[in-house]
Image (cartoon, rainbow, N blue to C red; front, side):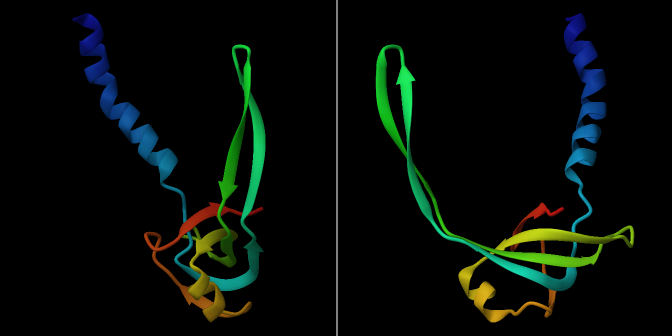
Length: 111
């Protein structure tokens, strides 16, 4: 019972920590600094379970990526990668300004 009471006291703190970790400063607009295309690929990996080794086939679909440069909420110049659809990839050129919503693209930080 004591453990549950401690957990109840820590829950708001844990939630706020997790939320702050997930709240990255994402771009909402910027210039397309670079476009990258990653073709689909398939590979086989051997996996051993006990004494039995079997091939496991993996597949990664093609990806269309924009590297966008712009100012984040702290007014810092940053670059971020966004996975976009093939149509969007073909509709924009390097150097064009783009506005976007985070729920329409997936992203990851670029270095």
